[in-house]
Length: 239
Image (cartoon, rainbow, N blue to C red; front, top):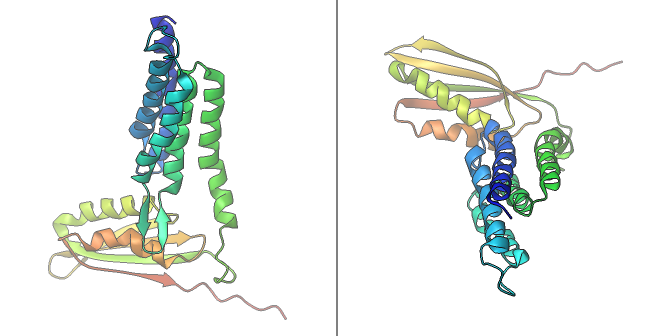
């Protein structure tokens, strides 16, 4: 194999890994553009090393040996992005995406560029297209009939920290399934500002809401944080 061929495979692994990571970065996940690109490039380099890095001695060039270690080794990296949040576990999808990025990189290192490209499209399609479907079928059995729920969030902060608090609020909500409808600020007594945000979710999820705004309660400039779920409008019964 020539140097040009190796560089082409490395470039393929880098580009396809970055494509997977772009979607993760856009959704503000823990493992984003750089992480997925590095995982794919690393897998590509390991496959190239296994296949062409040990000369032509009998029994030394075995790409499957290193590829198998990449599959198991990426599990340690994936475990680092899995977090336990109360009774919930977060980061499983990101860890699975990293695992797929390693697979794409291994395919690129083996010279299977078309299969690697198809795998990349499949990974991005699962993360994008199946997101709405997952929400539709993910209904808790004890919650009854689900309906969109509006939330109101209020935070009181110092006047000079208003922009910082608004940025933190938007960043926290980006990582959730809620949609931000509006955000506004109003002056209060004593040089303080009240930041108000209106949100809506496909279903009521108080635990996710509490997790999203808990970060703001740790800010020294924030004096109070509160939120509430607005009751849905009463439905008129047909006679």
